[in-house]
Structure formats: C-alpha cells, structure tokens
Amino acid sequence: MKVENKLFQNRYKVDTGHPHISIKDPNLCQNDCQTLACTVCCPAGCYTEEGNGKIVLITDGCLECGTCRIICSEFRNVDWEYPRGGYGILFKFG
Amino acid sequence: MAEKFDAIVVGAGPSGNAAAYTLAKAGLKVLQIERGEYPGSKNVQGAILYSDALERIIPDFRDDAPLERHIVEQQMWVLDDESYVGSTYRSADFNKPPYNRYTIIRAQFDKWFSKKVQDAGALLICETTVTDLLLDGNRVIGVQADREGGAIYADIVILADGVNSLLAKKAGFHPELDPKDVALAVKEIHFLPQETVQERFNISEDEGVVIEMVGKITKGMMGTGFLYTNKESITLGVGCMLSDFKYQKTTPYALLEQMKAHPAIKPLIAGGEMKEYAGHLIPEGGYKAIPKIYGDGWLMAGDAAMFVNAVHREGSNLAMTSGRLAAETVIALKLQGKPMNSANLSLYREKLDESFVMKDLKKYKEMPQILHKNPQFFTTYPELLNQAAHSMLTVDGVDKKTKEKEIRNNFIGKRSLFGLMGDAFKMWRAFE
Ligand SMILES: Cc1cc2nc3c(=O)[nH]c(=O)nc-3n(C[C@H](O)[C@H](O)[C@H](O)COP(=O)(O)OP(=O)(O)OC[C@H]3O[C@@H](n4cnc5c(N)ncnc54)[C@H](O)[C@@H]3O)c2cc1C
Ligand code: SF4
Ligand code: SF4
Image (cartoon, rainbow over all chains, first blue to last red; front, top):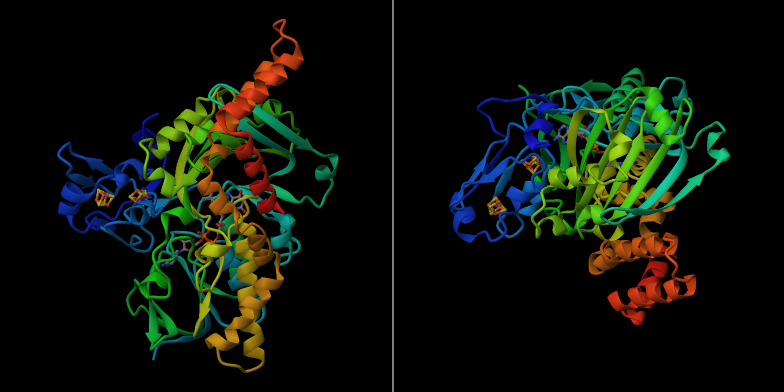
C-alpha cells in the first residue's frame, strides 16, 4: 500500500496557504546534504527529491511527528512549528 | 493586566490531564491549553493502559473509561524473514478483576480523561497552540497563545506538551533532541468483527492479547514492533531509533508494509479494514537523556521530560505519575505560601526520585547505549535463533546431538564465543 493511500484514511484540517514547516535554505539540501534523510524518514512522504537534489516539501499529509526537524541534525535546515490551533492532523483513533 | 491563573497546563495528554485534574481537585484555578481540536486528536499510543498510575488519580476509572480489552496474554516474538520464535505468558491471574492492563484507543481515552478534568473544575481551551513562554528574565510568568489577546499569566506553568516540547527549546531551557534519543513509530488500526478478533487470538469477550516483536522486521535498526487486540480492531506498528533511520533507505511506511506481509502477521490482520495510519515520536533516551525538568515558574512532565521506559514499553503511566507529582508539588508549595522558584520546585525532583518513574529509568540507564552499540541483538541473534529452532524442529534423519553442535558452531561462527558471552553479560548488567 502506498503512503498516499494510507494518508487517505486520515482526517486533516489543512491550513491552506500556511504550511507549518519550511526548508530554511534550499541550497543546503541541493549542494551540501549527503543523506537527504528527510526524504526517507518522513512517515508521510512529505519530502521528495526532484532528481537534481532539489527538495520539494508539501505538508498537507504531515503527521506532526517532528522527525524531519530532528533528523536534519547537521544542517538544522528545517523550520518547524505546530500548525495553528485546531489545524493539521486530526487522529480519530491515535 | 489579563486574567491570572494559579497554574497553566500546556497539553491535554496523559501528563497534562493528570496534572490539571490533581490541581483542580485541590481547588486551584487552572487553565489547560490544547492545540488539537479535541484532546487526543494529536496523540498516538499503542496503546496499553497501565491501571495503577490512573487508579492513583481516578480510583473508579473502570466505571466509565473507554477500555477495550484487559490483557490476559503477553507474547514475545523474535522474527526472522519467514519465521519467528516466540514465548507466551498467559495467566488466569490476569483474568481476575481488578485488571492490571487494558488496551485503549487514545483519541477516545484522552477525551474521557479530559471530561474528568473539566468536571473537576479546570478550564480547558482547545484549538489553541501555545507559541511561546512569557519570561521575566529567566522566570516563566505565563504563556503566549495563538489567539487574540493571547498573553495569559500564572504562578506556574506545567509543560506537558509531549515529546517535541518546542516551548522549552524556544525559551532556551533545552537543546534540540538528539536523533539517538528518539524513536519514530508508525502504526495502523485495522477493523474486524469482534468474533474474528476473538477467534484469531483464542480469547473471549473483553480478553486481550499483546504481542511484542524484535528482529528482522526492523531491518537491522534498533527498534521493535507490536500488535495489540482491541474490541473490534487490531493495532500494529513498528518503531526504530531516528539515528538508525537516518542512515538507511527504507521508509517508515515500507517498513510497516513489510511487517504486515510477514507470514506470521499477515493472517492475523487478513480481511481487516485499515482506518487510520499514524506516526509519532517516542523519547527513548532513558535516564541519561533526561533534560532539565523544572526552573523558576515552570515544571515539566511526561514525554517532554523523556519519561519513557522503552524496555517495558511504558510511557503513559510515567506521564500520568509525573503529571500528578508535578501538581502535588505545586499544591504543597501553595499551601505553605512559598514562591514557585527553582529552589522550591526541586521538591518535584525529590518526589520523582522516590517514585517508580526515576527508579525504573535509573535501573535501565545503560540499556540505550548497549543496544546502540550492539546491533547484533536486532540482526544476527534473531536469525540464529530462528535457524536453531528450524533445525531442531525439522525431522530429517539427522540426530539431535549433531544438530546441537551445528547450531552452536553457527552461533560462534557468526559471533565469537567471547562476543556471545560478552553480550550475555552486558544484557545481564543492564537488566540487573
Ligand atoms: C506508537 C506508540 C506506542 C506507544 N505505546 C504505549 C503503550 O502501549 N503504553 C504506554 O504506556 N505508552 C505508550 N506509548 C507512549 C505514550 O504514548 C506517551 O508516553 C504518552 O502519550 C505521553 O503523554 P504526554 O501527556 O506526556 O504527551 P502527549 O500524549 O504527547 O500529549 C501532549 C499534548 O500536548 C499538546 N501540545 C503540545 N504542544 C502544545 C502547544 N504548544 N500548545 C498547546 N498544546 C500543545 C499536544 O497536542 C498533546 O495533546 C506509545 C507511544 C507511541 C508513539
Ligand atoms: S535532511 Fe535537511 S539538509 Fe538534508 S535534504 Fe532534508 S532538509 Fe535538506
Ligand atoms: S513532522 Fe513528521 S510527518 Fe510532518 S513533515 Fe516532518 S517528518 Fe513528515
């Protein structure tokens, strides 16, 4: 089962236009990062590599776990906040 | 100046609810702030509830708490790619009330607990994220919330904001978490008819089974898997340390898919309807990774304070107990008319040290390092154990003594005799 199909089962209230996570310096991802760990470790597949080392981040399916922030430990290149109150993932079961 | 409270509790998980409940019961004016739409909407657990910790807060919780099944059987599986070696402990004792452990569904449980907190007199506001602590020098005097007029003041702020605990980091109280101190767990819930759950696990109504797993399912990473029975659903998941996740190429969802496809696991969830996929961090750094847990005007409880016993998969009970002890500290100081400064709040640490929370964390304090440094516990051993079982149980004309010898040579071949003894010794010391 693909991750998109998994996320499809979840409830979200997306704060359109206000992503709560962003990459601080895209150049670091493209030129300096060896692991691209965020693209492997994000449990919602929010980070994808475009082929040329460019990282695209789409936070709509984010589970708000915090992995991407902690795993980017050499560069601290992830700006990470909680979504605004009430927005984001809404676990029905947890 | 805006309204002032005796205490503000950030978070409505088990630690925040335990704290807010205890404070409100003692008559303090309490404000609790939760960023989710409802308590539980951001929270993830296996989920096993340990009765004792909750009983000390709400003695009659069994009357109306949303409990799924009480646990009568615990299995431990060591998995290879196609097989597992397992142990089972089932006891009639576990079937005598009052039951010691239950499966729960966190979103429902947190809602229930929160209702008790509000009935006790605490004021809860949801859909509100605390964005910063308000400081006067180094002293916390309140919180800033993402609402209009969001500055709110209190004598003490209890940080029960979970594993990421951004607030203490922003205020400069804590550094960022180290990838070696946190595990990422992903899980799913699969719905099946109640009778099917009962048939598959050989249990009757209300009885439940817990399966804990180690071995090939984590692809050599330090981690574990689990499968728990609810009333009419099964939850299963797998978690590994971020420091290991970082340097390999399997995604968390691929790991979960591979686990679900294991020949021993697949039939247990066959035909189920998957209704949610969740991911969450677990603070597993243990005793040595516990950060600063109090300071002028603030206390910290639960996951935020690294209070998880990874060896026994306990977290919510440490969260509830630390939340309760944080509240009792505040109540004691309040009664004595003492200010909520760091020196006086050290009483919290004393209370924790006397409780199972610190005692257990201390007992296993070497465990995380040992496991980090010895990946064979997650790779070579599961494989060897399964091969040994396979060999002994296959009737093929080879005598048992020859087989034993082969198994022994196999173990020594993969890991020197000295290494094996050393591992046994390390494990013994860590559990001692
Ligand atoms: C997959 C998995 C399985 C587990 N299994 C078990 C188990 O079987 N048994 C067990 O005992 N433990 C288990 N645990 C551990 C257990 O879930 C945690 O230890 C427990 O939830 C910690 O409670 P807490 O109240 O400290 O934190 P949380 O439950 O995380 O609660 C924190 C709360 O604070 C809120 N919050 C955070 N920041 C803010 C902010 N800035 N403003 C407003 N609100 C905020 C969050 O929305 C959340 O509601 C498991 C954990 C995971 C991830
Ligand atoms: S791990 Fe950090 S630096 Fe590397 S690609 Fe991801 S965000 Fe960029
Ligand atoms: S917080 Fe977790 S789910 Fe969200 S983008 Fe980061 S790693 Fe992915």
